[in-house]
Image (tube, rainbow, N blue to C red; front, side, top):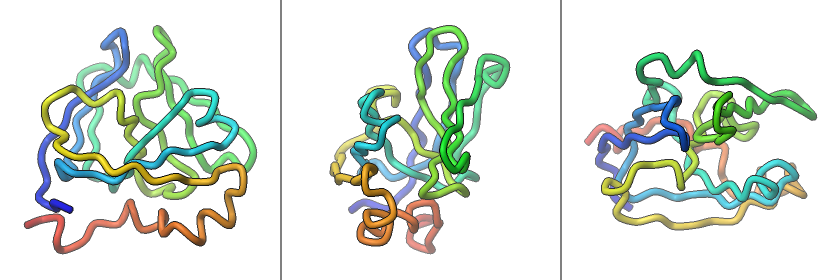
Length: 141
């Protein structure tokens, strides 16, 4: 997988929430079946939080929902309701970027992996998802 970082932009449907993120052009995205992700039909890729930046006055239009362990911070636009990013339980030091909310043109390849959120603990241990928010030396090349 390509590890050179490129600038991706994206946001919500009404464009009140906009962000930019540095990530490879080829990413691994997670299709999760937990109670929240399955209802939203969410597929996301995870990046270290220092590579993600909200743009303009986006923060004013964001609200957050938590449940269960309250580790995940499910953010969404107050106007259109879209979750374009959130802080995942699997990587509380990272950002999960909703694949379908990335502006077209910068993602060249997406590998979809399944995360069994209905059996969260087992899937967390088996998939290696916890390492997704960790920057590596390869990422800066």
